[in-house]
Image (cartoon, rainbow, N blue to C red; front, side):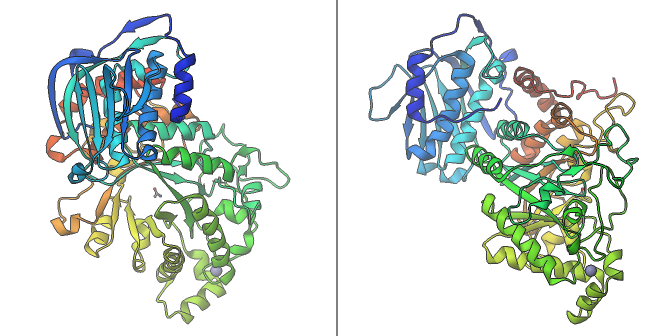
Length: 560
Ligand code: ACM
Ligand code: ZN
């Protein structure tokens, strides 16, 4: 379902050349219900329907470049599904018989930058928001009011008749950070899947794609100044036939053939595609641990000097680590981050920080010297020194540092945002210190965990996270005061891919748990109801089916 946005002129050309398709079928939302996920704040059903025909026109009101990403997305969806190329006009133009009207409207500022209103009447549809992102979410809701078959791939020959039930909707999200993480280090996923992944986020009104680009098992981002990061670091020996935790390291002379990486040109295109869908990509560059792939390429930035080889599977504990005593390490990392910031316009840069075992630092004369010279107590404070230094660098480029909750150990860097994964305590502590927090606890957000009976499910890392538990996720822990809660930016789920090697398997782990996540981070707690969600899920699963998404079918009764 990769959808490219077309400009208005292209549409006019397409309108002239595309005729209606031969086969048509009527398809209305099942049980006449409004199976919208995530559930909107306010919805009133009205009488009647709007039918899209060849006479339907789209009217744009407001800055063309602000409205067009949403208008183009909607027009392309309609065209792919029905074969109808809607014509465009501005509000001053000739009034069409049936219009879909998209407008930026300053009077809706109280709905925030992502809120919107959507009104469907028999002869017109109005989508309004004060900001472009809100219009995009109005479009996503409108598409969910259409038959699920509109989600079919653009190539599908089965053209459908689009009827939309009349309704009034006013909506806005609960949180500004609605995230999903994909680990492309443990297994590499090609750019085509990354585009599809971004489509998935858009469909669920998620706005943050946390891209875990590097780890011990592969470095996946081209860095021009350090070509060996991908020449060496992106490749490992093929041990895919063995269990993740029973993989022999690379032998001398053995060729590394398993992996891949994204070129900077590919990344720029992906970032642009995401931006057109109001999705921010947060790149993650791990430090000081989870760095074996980088050290395989440049062992001089370790304490021991190596050699290292890219790990083909799991190793625990993770003792490979950047040397915190060498100035050269910081120059290397700042050079990398400079290229990363050039590619990713995100306010936040994720620096990892998790699971670093510091035994190398304890042994290393240069690290010990650093501890002494900086008046640090121990290796935990040395990690804090490391992260603070990187934060100063990011801040000097108007970026903000975010890291996993281990960055609290040894003292939190002054402006740092904490991503709380080992439960919620790290997030609670950080919020009480006045730091921003993204909640992503394993208990509710780890999509690499089993979602059903481990005896019948595909091999997973462990754990148990059924759909119903994801649905219970509340990013704001009850023990925080209202003021402390204001530091919770939102929530995020993570797909680590040690045991996930194909796009189909990734989709199986993501869906429909991503639907439950979407509602947990968008919908107000008072409006959430599991039974109601399970009913609306019927429509969502039909959409997945139309889009060819390989979702987990037994999600509602995982032990049948
Ligand atoms: C993590 O799961 N190591 C952040
Ligand atoms: Zn060292």
